[in-house]
Image 1 (cartoon, helix red, strand yellow):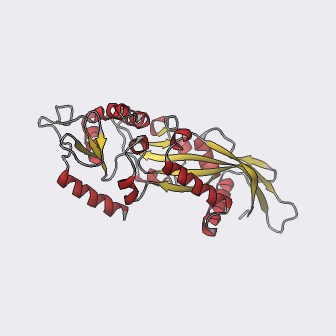
Image 2: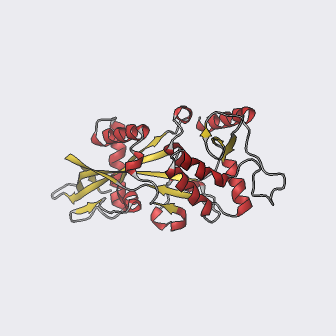
Image 3: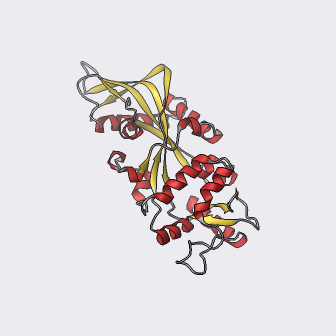
Length: 292
């Protein structure tokens, strides 16, 4: 549904907006004839969108790299194996992200899911996800073992992840979300939660079983900063951006950035992680799992 919505929205926008276009002397020109993409970070900063500007500047300065489709979901990818060129953990902070109401709503939804105040299905998924990650990390041993205590977000993601929720991912949200720093920085993204606590083997159990005591929840963002697929990225000039077309604005889309990368041989896609936001639970959660 999202792809169909994007395709329809892009087709409609091309009818009423003025798409950014290549210069007549391309490829000798800077690239585009009406506005250069490298002007967009400065336009963001003029509107107070500093985080969005920082991420875009990082993309412009990176070596040319198109993100593999498998990285988009993160399934089967061990992020600890990625180089610094392909991952950023310094630009996005959770205190910044939690200033936005749409992040706050999803953060509260995740808290309810982990605490058991959501659906039984969501709780069961959360427990299974954590148990599988503890098993893969070698935490289900013969002694009490802490987990989720690393200060590094990638380590926590790979060893203590529990659940996640998308933010601003459907078509309606993309239409109604305001153009703000979150919109320019991440657009749609995923809020994750991991756990911090201790896993302890149970004595005299018929099967090898463990008690998992969760003392803190650990929230963070993971997103892909890339320009694959077809997507509208707003209508721009050197000082402003709007969702709706205007006579003094030019529509930018994902393909614009791919053209820029092809021309300049720069522009590197990368995975974004925020820092960690730890929240100590007033009453620890206790789950039980069996080693299979």
